[in-house]
Image 1: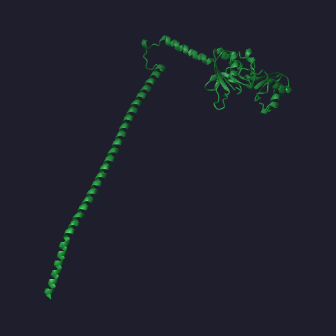
Image 2: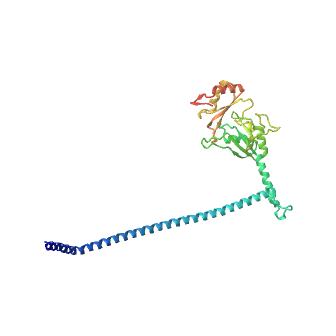
Image 3: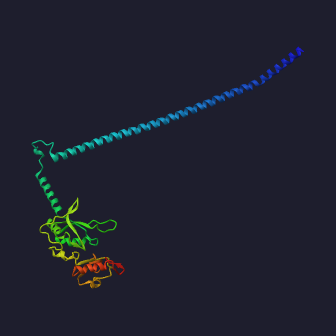
Length: 326
């Protein structure tokens, strides 16, 4: 029995060893292949890690290079601004020293250098220029409280009676196109400006007392009446008295505006005649020079101030040809 058991056991061992010997080459081959694949995978991961680290280093180098270039440009710009600032500061300081020197003479020696003397011709020219500037200032006058329907040509025709006008500046509103109710006139001679100020200040122009004086940047205008100024309502120039804008003493003239262009002066005179005797009725002619059409406004002169006031109170807002009179 023992022998039988031993033989059977030995046969099993032999059969197992045969089986192991038969599968051993394929198992070894598989192990080698698996080991090779693991090595290849590890090598591939290592290469990817190396490539990623290399890309990261390159990105960092590019970023550092950009920062260095930006910093370099900032330093150059700062140095350039600093030099320009120092240059401007030096120029300002030099200009300040020159102004202070010319104003107070703080850095000039007790005995001036003959080479620094001003040329007599230059001094004479400067003096003549200053005198001309002072003279032109005396030729200027300010005119305020001007009625809006009074044009620049009307003002020039009235104030041109006092002398030749060099310039007439009447500011206008860019939106409405109307003037702002004031203007500046420069005469050729100071005496003309003085006569205009003394004669026309407070005079009634188109029913409104105008303000005539000397221009002043602080208060708009100044007016210093002279002892030989004419009474309000009178001027010594006959041509100015003939102007339709000049209202005679006593306020006997009235202004009529917003008149239809088809209505003539005769019709206006007939409409206002029931209030009293009319000395004159003039409608302002258009600027085309033909005189065939008026500008929509005019002036009526009555014999007394009472009649004029009655006409104003009754006819202001009266509708004529579909338009309310003013």
